[in-house]
Image 1: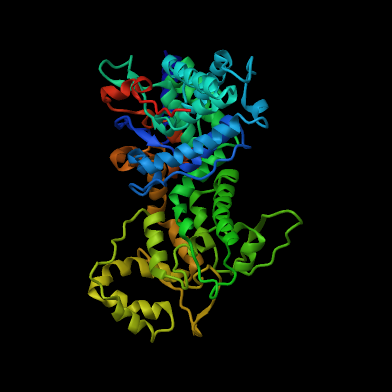
Image 2: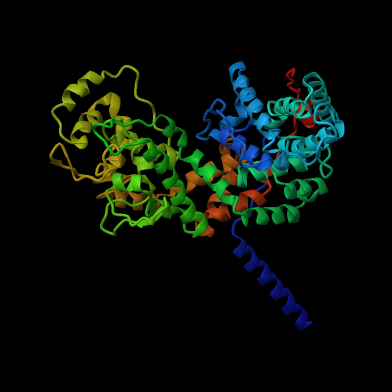
Amino acid sequence: MRKSIFHMIAAVAAAISLSACDGPREPEATGGPPAMRRLSNDQYRNIIADVFGPQITVAGQADSLKRSEGMLAVGAQTAEITPSGFEKFYGMAKSIAAQVVSESNRAVTFPCEPKDAVGADDACARTFFAGAGRLLYRRPLAQDELTLAVETARRAAESSGDFYRGVAVSLANMLVAPQFLFITDEVEPDPAAAGLVRLTGFAKAARLSFFLWNTTPDDALLRAAESGDLHTQKGVSAQVERMMASHRLEAGVRAFFEDFLHFEQFETLEKDTIIYPAFTVKVVEDSKEQLLRTVVSLLLDRKQDYREIFTTRDTFVTGSLARVYRVPTSRPSGEAWVPYRFPDNDPRAGIITQIGFAAVASHPGRSSPTLRGRAIRENLLCQKVPDPPGDVDFSLFESADALKKTARERLTIHRTAPACAGCHKITDPIGLGLENLDGLGQLRTTENEAVIDPSGDLDGVEFSNAADLGKALHDNPAATSCVVGRLASYALGRSSNEERNYVQYLEESFASDGYRFPDLMRRIATGDALFAVTPAPTQLVSAQSSTPEMERSP
């Protein structure tokens, strides 16, 4: 009896201990309606490289996605393809298909040889489309889809007298089909809950793969979907661990931060080269890569606290970046990137002092505390800053600005004018902390021969320079809440505002895990919320048979 009581007490203690170690428990997922999300340009390119090889060139790009709730990944759910947008996709599809069937690539891209290259061969075409289509559509082709692909290839081959030309015509059609261009939440009746639906195994595979790898599911993940493993927690966890151990996880991390940090702004980045002679196209490209390398090294390779992206002095530079930063580099011959650490007494620390942030949030010919403060508020803290009123008379400020030497002096009138004060008071005290960096991100101590004062405050926390601003961001709870909410939205493909309890759970878990970004990704990937759906419209239950095929004549 005494032994039995002892075992009961031990079991209860172990359960309590296990619960404490596991951290917060995931709340029941609300889910959202099944949706279709258009591929991004990067996802499109990644899929083509994975299916047909990196030697295939994707010429051009489709229309850019629009942001919704702060993320392009959420905007993809409402993206449409206009007639002109379709022509762009079709032009890329024809170019890709021609390369796939070219003599130089056939040995890599084709699993068979036709019996007669000057005519149709249904058997070889069927083998090709069954294999490639499974990866392109993220599921096995339905019988009618496979039959259509083979028949289209046959007609084109008979018309042109070229088997490979026929395959190219049919493949181009597949590359503009909705089944390829849109990630579709296909659903099926849930056997565990009468009247409800669940994502199919293939839809779950797609959600996992685009979240963790930013590309189509590989063969192992599709096989797990076919076997039903992705309908079990054990099966999902096994695939997530496999995928997170892969080098491809870096592509997924990069894709998220490109979205999170608004990398589309680099497409319109311009600087006055008379004022900033060190500015070149190479600087733009390298500054994007520097941000990503810094983040990947810190969060993925070294698994450091996420908040350290605001305080780290470790980064990587190239020759072009070293000229802008005015720092020495000992770059071995042929090595483009080298590690660099800013000295402890240098005000530059964290990603907000890198060119990819400081230059983007500036004007072409000068810095902008307002733009920089707004970028920190909106991009890093997820706090909306209102646009300026449409009736502001900027001539009043321009005439006054001419008499002021520093940005702090020039902005004083903005912060005191009633029409401008509200917004400028929540942006300028932050952005002024970066004024030791000019419009290109070059270090300076004076402006117009006047000494710069880079002090300011962030939500009541005072700082004296950019490095201290980074520390204030490090300690600001909105910084971690922001990245958690954005990552959840990125994974779910919809606004995480609809899942407040779930996001709160992720925030608490993130803190208990030491703010380790890979652990946050794992929790999302293995949780129920990623796959939760509400009852769907009938037309989405069997998407593979209801989605129209876009066909072009040869």
